[in-house]
Image 1 (spheres, helix red, strand yellow):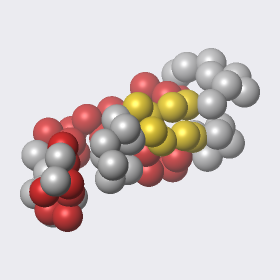
Image 2: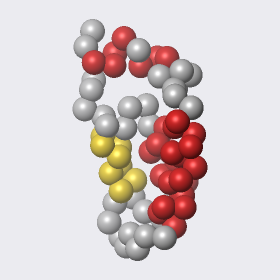
Image 3: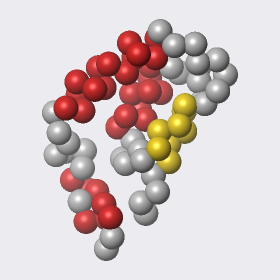
Length: 70
C-alpha cells in the first residue's frame, strides 16, 4: 500500500477540527468572487470533504475533484 491507502478509510472520521473552521470560510469566500463560468478544481481532494462544501456553496458552477493518490 502506498500514500493514503492505509489510512483513507479513517480520514473522514478522524479529520482535524481545523477542517470545520476552514469549511466555514469557503462559502463566504466564494460568495464575494466573480467566478463566471469557469469550473472550480479541488486538487488533492482526498475523500471529497472540501469538494462537497464547494459544491454546496456554488451549485451553479462545475466542481471537479482530482485526487492523484490511488
